[in-house]
Length: 470
Image 1: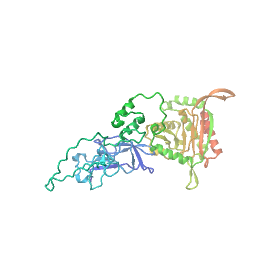
Image 2 (image 1 turned 120 degrees about the vertical axis):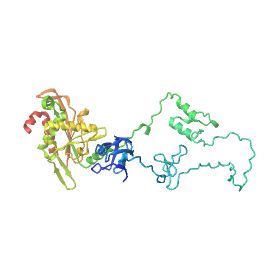
Image 3 (image 1 turned 45 degrees about the vertical axis):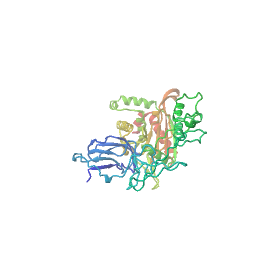
Image 4 (image 1 turned 180 degrees about the horizontal axis):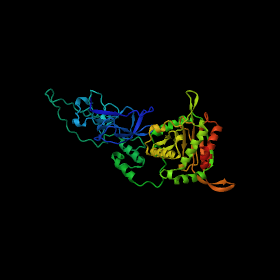
């Protein structure tokens, strides 16, 4: 059994077929232990650390950070018996015939004899790379060189040719391109001018026959720009391309699937949350909550959970396979979180059974883990109802798209001081706007309106609602 074992990218669950290597936690030569985290990989679900399957010494890393690797492909090689001495050297017969690609005159990549990935020369197995120097075909009009034979006595050497006067100076053998604007310049010079943004038509060449040289181009490029502004360029030089992969790719696919499969309806409600903000101050001052971060989102989440008790149909999903509405007796409350890798919606399992203190702790943990990029796939599966807190960005509200499989999502807008009619007088009150999107196949206008109304009623006076609803 080989002491060198190749560790392949494992199946991380839920039908994922590939992952992007974010960072290596080890390097070649490191001694590792069994189950030691060795690499951080991002899948379409989340970023996870993968532990080593064997203990030993890392001998090879197959893919650098930033590479997308298919499940089952080797990612690292491990010497599982580092104390057994040096590894045997591979025999020459086992190696393919390769050669470092030449710096000049390289064949087009991918062709036989051309450079292959890794700086090798592509060859057919059993045929080594060409190791004799190529000879230029004689130029038209040039007499062929006298033939030569091996000095084995079979033919006398040719007599030396009579010296002739040196011909007049001729242009270099490198072809000179005169097609563009009638300017004499070799192809490499033209490419240099294009790269530096120099117009060859404006240059006076100093080379043979008035051709433009590399020095002419460099001098022109070094001169100050003309007073007139350069024309605007609208091409790839002023564009940035961001690969869509991982979490961002999955989010895009899910949003498209949800937007065009579930008929969305969005309703809005403006709410005076002055008493909610005062209740938060009391909660923060409470002995039971002094070591827990408390935000308005806590009471919004509580309002949603209590409203679900009154309207359980809201916490449902549509089964197209069976033609049924599946009403959930548990609430896995999703909280949309913006991360560096894209939008994710982890959920708090069975949130309806948590106390207010437990709910606050769960919200804090969810947000902290999401920001660290370590949210496991299990935390993002099985959501039944979600909240997106757009207010943290100063946004009033929105029309959120349903996470796949869910029937409702609430947008919680920014809380702002606004003029409000309170007890028949105009006063400055703390006001927010709620936006509820729901699947109209499951939730009709009446049910959606009542559900949103009850959330608003709770946030208008949470202390009274807690006493009467519990």
